[in-house]
Image (cartoon, rainbow, N blue to C red):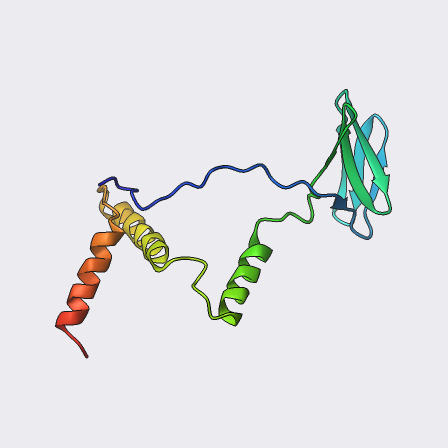
Length: 145
């Protein structure tokens, strides 16, 4: 079994585009450069050929060669936390299954512990969550408290 056998790789997906809301106190100027000025400072970048920006009612959109695309705001990145919390809350409210399976939680925790142990000993250690769970269940059944 591979050292990282419990690690599953999800297929990569393109991020969902959405308009970038311009936060209050932030001024955006579009010319041959895109200039953003706010409470934390000012930044300016050149706009490549074929790219234009459109500002409408506090929303910034990018247009590439006439094809409209929206751009994520640097200040309001969606890293999936909101969806994660919504899914978690829904599973509790509806008394459904956990959005993260028990085996995945054990695998993640075991991998973290093995990394720490590997760094301390200098040895490569396997991460076999199935064997770990089986051993824990066997020990638990032999020693009921």
